[in-house]
Image (cartoon, rainbow, N blue to C red; front, side, top):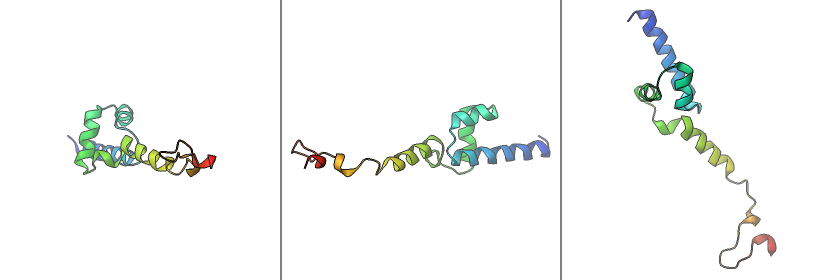
Length: 88
């Protein structure tokens, strides 16, 4: 492998890791860079990034955080009474 090719591959790998950390999925990255999803996982692992630190896990975590607090408290039922706070 030539030096230039190696540098291009390093840049590609850095781009993959950055996109993964921003929430892009491994499948989407694989399609974009024309490599397998398994290879994307290997690149991410070699960079020292865990799978739960980005990709779909990151997107799901952000979605859960955004959902918290969306329902008003008065819509929660009072356990054991069969009524809600709004009915009181």
